[in-house]
Length: 227
Image 1 (cartoon, helix red, strand yellow):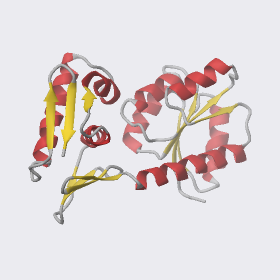
Image 2 (cartoon, one colour; image 1 turned 90 degrees about the vertical axis):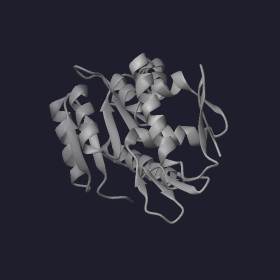
Image 3 (cartoon, helix red, strand yellow; image 1 turned 45 degrees about the horizontal axis):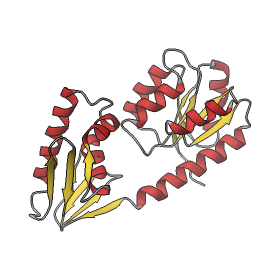
Image 4 (cartoon, one colour; image 1 turned 180 degrees about the vertical axis):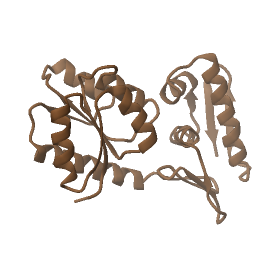
């Protein structure tokens, strides 16, 4: 099994949070514990955990809201929800907003650990398959690197890498402008649209060594990557 997994735990019940944290740490996990959703979101951005374990009912920002905000900028990190609720509607909502698994309280630590390992291992396998070919470029999405032939790799920003990934996965098809703005920027307002235009310009410059690659602006609809 994988060890030394960096995990973000958001749990507002302090006693339960400490029990989970200490139990995981005895099994070689690195645990970042937060007692509300707002703190958890800040720690997610600064600590780059490998997996999230989120209590659904939390003050300031609940687990579902937190997951939605994280999914808007990261569609790969595994998310496990912890909840005292067991209604089907709650389970469905958790999965529909991007949750990968769901544990009802009370639960056994062994079950939580098995589920964490399964999700982290699955995600690592998926990431290794995300090295994509774009004409004469190789795009390593997990590492956020772009390489032209045998030259040194260029490091992309988080948003550049995710925008390019979606363009490549929809190669030769129009990537809906509003859809990608909501997914990566969290809104499709004017200022976000202008920001996206700037990122498209940056990607064009980084891909300009292969004359066959184009990112076409399809006015009123979005962008299309052609090779």
